[in-house]
Length: 73
Figure (tube, one colour):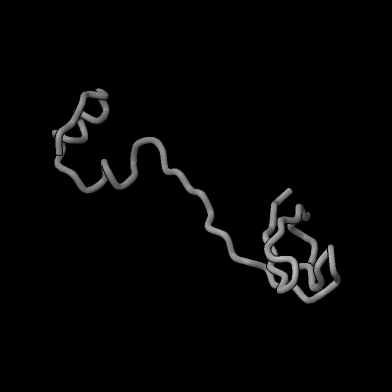
């Protein structure tokens, strides 16, 4: 279940777990004043072969990366 961050003028920021299908909150759960949802960055980690560090490099770099050798750039 996603964790959303909301901002209230009186209470400040607070987190609320909600199903992704639920509508965004319109009032604060503490004081019932209007709230706005605060956009949060998404953590993305690219792992494995086929991403930037191995795509646009010479073939010898790719071969060394596949052999897990230390590579100096």
